[in-house]
Image (cartoon, rainbow over all chains, first blue to last red; front, side):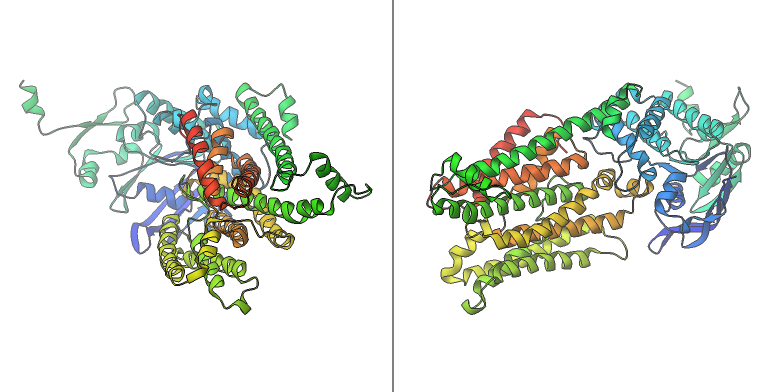
Length: 267
Length: 359
């Protein structure tokens, strides 16, 4: 069974170390959330997992194999990434961009076959992007582009799906739809889903396990119940919040507790 | 492959639209190829010596194997067509094709609509080499201008590349900046040499603006393999070049070896640009306008964009050079003046037609 395993990994850019001594494990059917304040290294961790940057210490294993020994195109067949704010070429159509997800499955000089077109169509159906398949990227909204990159990742037919703040540009309807979809794929296709998330409530609701990063190190790692607590959030984010069990499922829900609250209530 | 897909009725609508597009573009390639042949034939009939179309065809027919026609035309007509006009037309076509392909490649690699084949030092290196060639003592001059122009172009880009390279990676912004800076440095030397060049200045300026007036067959023979090789390599990398339109991170995450693709495409595009300019000079505008015009008409997919740009570049420069040698005949206009003077209004017209995003 394929699994993702990080062993004492340190990551950084040039000499500057961003993440230090990260160890974690994720198995198929499991959704792992990475949370932490701005600049805590969420995106860097995702970049490291996809080998855009190499660990300065420690190792990343996929299915027991060291990622450093896997060729780029084989890695792209196992692992797909939905980047935060991806730049997409304005003149290409939505369909063409999703078709780019088939790249790691195609030999360098080959054209796409019927099978590729069908996989792309399916990926666009699942992400509800088929309606604008023939539109150009320049005519799409931020949310449509976001779903399109998810479709492209699905077209790679990966076993690991990495999402870097997939809900950042979406309104609440699509935030829910996107994470519902990620969760569904995770369970139905037995994928490993690793997602960096800003929103603590979404993280608690959707992820099986959470990693809370603070200053480049793992502050705590465990189930949402263990990680999302007002104490942890105070320590890591320096913010006062009120955490209580969600009325529907008792998962931790975070409420902001602004200092001005009493003052406002008087009016 | 695509033909089966076109006939496949089981494909869902969105997927079926895609092979259809391949087909219309494939027809465009065939159409432009036919147009290129017509343009080559037609322009070889045009010039200061009128040659009837019938004579023209007979001259070409007679050259084909197994066909024997008794020559009824003056031998001068045959000389003019086969030894003066045809090599010139072919060299113009090759140069146009090379500049258009290199321009498309640079625009794709840099993801920048302002990129052209001269962006990172090819032209300034070639110009300096050529000017040095012009200034050499007469006894050294045989063939020195194209040779030094070619060497200058390759060396300049080589220097820019080695300056911009950081470890194993090549940041494209650094590459552009290094190219612009080195280009300015080389131009400074070139201009100084031009000022002290005395009566050779006219020849130098003509070369810098581009001219095919002294073309002969051996030039065509020398340039052809370089351009053929470079263009073939670029065509083969059309799909990776499409993926590079995302950005380097995404291309890598889709399994593309980005640094290798950049290196191969830069080397190939530089080689064909150097080969294109070494005999005929720094012809401007073709390398930036043709890629945009083709993209505006047929879309951004490099698998079609590159061959379409190749053919359009060849046709355009042949037509421009025909205008250069005939408009003010017997005086030759530098072809670079024609490409800008006629090409710019055409491109502005295209821009006005299409109000949507162009890159």
